Image 1 (cartoon, rainbow, N blue to C red):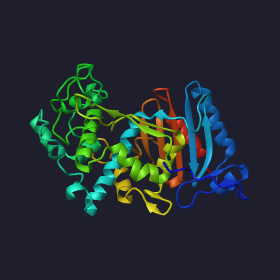
Image 2 (cartoon, helix red, strand yellow):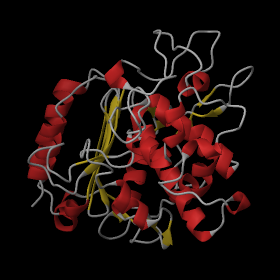
Image 3 (cartoon, rainbow, N blue to C red):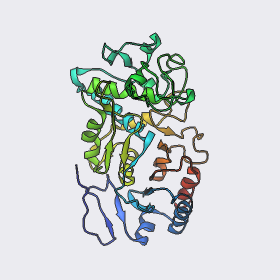
Image 4 (spheres, rainbow, N blue to C red):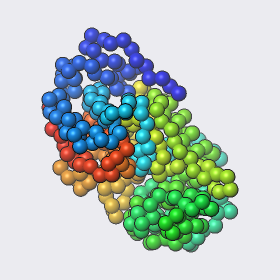
Amino acid sequence: MTKMKIMKPQKDNYYPSADSKGGWRILQDNKAIKNLTRMNLDRLNIVIENYKRFSDNYASGIVIIRNGHLIKEHYSFMTLPGSRFDIWSCTKSFTGTAWGLLFEESRKGTLPGNAQVDLNTLAYNFLPKKLQVTDKRKEGITIGHLLSMTSGIAGEDRLTFGIPTNSNHGPFEHALGYCENRYGKKTNTLIAKPGEIWDYSDPAMAHLSILFKSIMKKEIHEYMQEKVFSQIGIENASWDVLGGGQFLGPHTSSHIGLHISARDLARFGYLLLNKGFWEGKQIIPNWWVDVATKPSQKLNQDYGYTFWINTKGTRWPGLPKDMFALEGYNSNRCYVVPSEDLIVVRVGAGPNQWNEQALISGILDATN
């Protein structure tokens, strides 16, 4: 993997990246932080102290990037900058990014077999013929429906959490509707016609893993390593695969299962902040970052294409409307606030819920 370049400290005491237009620089001096990032460190330190008071009993890490500079890190006991955490549903946004890259390849005519794929492409057209449709209405599901949680495939509103199965079933078989999960829930029948209901569905996301391999001829985790991770210096990351043996797969776990450090998740957030641009290269298509971080449908306008958004000011009332985030269980988060040139990452092993509004508001109050 690509090694992060660490250079000798310069006069203003920060470590420059290879190109100031990408990556970030690590500030070591309080005066430099104040001058270059317009942050009130006293206020910022109070925010972090409050965080420590309520959250340091969990293994966790926080990274704050402001104006292209890493200005604050905090790690709880036995947690290091390179410590990896399962970021749970934040994984979905990485999956969505892989699909944005696939759409770009389709536009350029570089997909295997010159396949043509976009948000309106019918998903089941690219599933292997041997995989029978368990509900005729599934034939109307598009890639866009899967990415926006409007496929009609049962999700959390119907108590269908994840794709865990009994020992004699496979996870992708459950996602496709062939068998129950370990809680006795099935996805064989849609809960509504595609596009008519919003339900946060892990089984729907699992479809995207099978489809990606079918179209790209590569697994999502392999493709993202090549096209994104190695390009921006992500080193402390690994990605689970599911299935295999007598079951469908193994395929990348597209809904959860990416394990990554706080710093490396912040790298990804900074890439998104810069519309996919990093050190002189367009890594992610800027048009996809724009599309993915705007409302993807009218049923839940706080959700884009695998990203949580604040366009209507209803996801995080009182916070910037251009703010968007990757969100996962155990309070794993990557917040991106373009208008404030700000990235805030929190990774950890818990708690299940926390006052994210207070954390981000406090950090924003520390900006000058």
